[in-house]
Amino acid sequence: MRLTAFTDVSLRLVMRLAVAGEGELLTTRTAAGMLAVPYTHMAKAVARLSDMGLVETRRGRHGGLRLTEEGRRASVGTIVRELEGGGDLAGCEDAPPCPLRSACRLRGALRDAREAFHSSLDAVTVESLVAPPSRDVLTLLRPE
Image 1 (cartoon, helix red, strand yellow):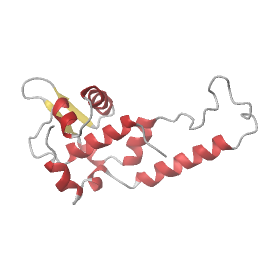
Image 2 (cartoon, rainbow, N blue to C red):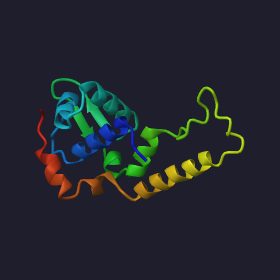
Image 3 (cartoon, helix red, strand yellow):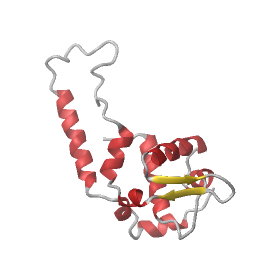
Image 4 (tube, one colour):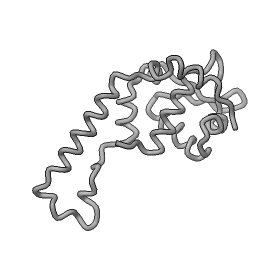
C-alpha cells in the first residue's frame, strides 16, 4: 500500500517536531524547507495535524509549531488511518460503477489488507520512530 503525499508530509513533520529541542518552535515555512516540501503542502498538513490535536500552533512573533504530548504518544497506525481516510482502494463506485460490484470479493480483500497494514503500524509510536539513528538525522535537518 502506498501512502498519499499528504500523509507522508504529515508523518515527516511529526517526526521532526518530535526531536525539537526544549523551546524550539519551527514555523511552517521553516519546516517546509527542512523537509523539502512546498509550503502550501506543509500548511495543509499543519492544519490537519492541529485539528487532530497532535500539533500545537502559536501565532505571532514568538510563534511556531510544537508536538503535543498526544502527538508524541500517538501510534502511526492511528495517524495514518485518520489522514488516509477509509475510502475504497478499488474504484468500485467510480463512474461508471463497476459491473462486478454485486459479486466481487476484491473490495473486501482490499479492505482487509488495508486494515492489516494499519494494524501493523499500531505498535509503532511517533516516539519510537525518532529513536537513534533517526533522531540524529532529524536534528541535523536545516532549512533549504
